[in-house]
Length: 203
Ligand code: ZN
Image (cartoon, rainbow, N blue to C red):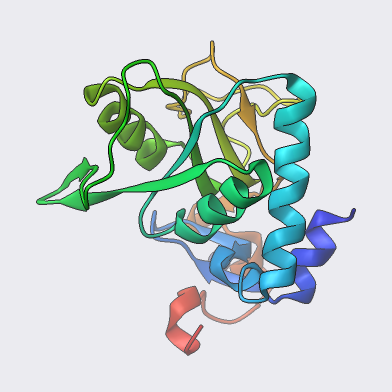
């Protein structure tokens, strides 16, 4: 399965000259939600992540997704694993589990995102799960931005990665893009126009 091609075909992997929220420029941008627009694609990708988790032998009772980004991926993964699906959401800036969701003491929870960049939101959801007595057994995402090392990849984690090194992280593909200081951006130098914010053209 060519994950990058699936993202390209869904217009989830954009090529151009982008201004990232960090202020850096990049020739690529991932619009993760777009790949989940087609439920059949969401199902296909989630089943591939579920296969990795099952082959690893990891015991999971529940999938917990940080809202909003992880909701669809989390639900699709829970469906593929035939496990419970819950989510955490930010309340006054703090990731919280509400809406009547319960977690039993020692319940084995995997945190699922659509994409892991440094894993910040995933870690906040993990903290919320642990505060309710759950055991976070691992992390999952459809795509990985390449800051954290996923299972079955020979990349290494960078210091930016917030995920714990002693728990498995499952994802389908590394989307590691070069990012450039605007003053030293080869796309600017090559006259590729002004860097645009990916949301600025209605996407
Ligand atoms: Zn540039």
